[in-house]
Length: 326
Image 1 (tube, rainbow, N blue to C red):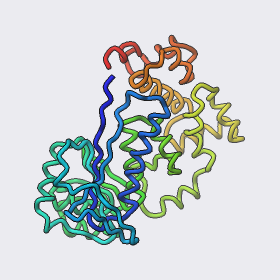
Image 2 (image 1 turned 180 degrees about the vertical axis):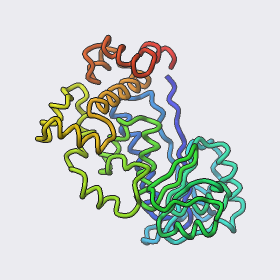
Image 3 (image 1 turned 180 degrees about the horizontal axis):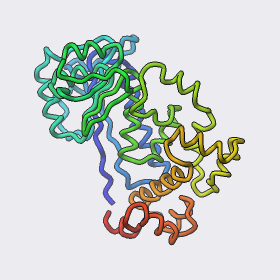
Image 4 (image 1 turned 45 degrees about the horizontal axis):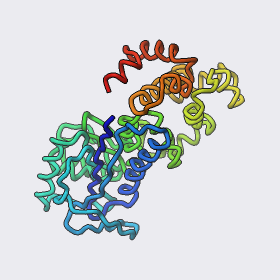
């Protein structure tokens, strides 16, 4: 089975914020590590590169930290799967760099995804890629982005917005949330949860969450043990994950646990468990050499027959059919 390496290129402006550069890179790098730990040797892993928007390869972060890019964008010849453009709190304009803007326009036609972090949205706008699009950026610069590019629809509230192959995200840590969402799209919920836990991130802050006081609001309304339940489920797929067992773990009644869980995760505990079991099984079938019996046992199914029935009901095809097609 061929392992396809997805090239993630992060284009940094000369004064990009350090965390907006390193944060997404760490998410994709951790995903590679977690794939190996999960035994998914056939998964499509990431090649990650940091490229500069100018000939000077130094990124001068506002914090004083200097980061050295591998090369200038003009030297990047290999195909890019996902292009991320990171800006900073000191706004930088690409208007004096027409070659860069032309390169970005060319990449937009070729890449599978293109995204911005913080004021990287201004670079996308200067390249003419945001006209008529609903986008976001750091709340402090939202009005300025709207005034400079009136054909763009700027929403200052979401932490990130996705529209087809285009994504824009808010400042600083929102870049990690976006990167985590891209990892989930590529590699599944199980790997994104493992990455989130390894990096001590809040589990999957959603696209619709607001930029302002998001973490404080979550701390005030979310029970910390409940936030760990997805990880517990992931790491105990072969165990008893009934509502009663999960509720007992949190010293809650099954009825109250079911209600609170549904409010937090927009699905019932049983649905969540089945989705995670089937998603993990599908990816193990496609990206490992484990037998049907091994996968069924690892994912909490009574046997290969039970896995086959659940798989057919959920996806419309059987596990052997999936393996035959890979």
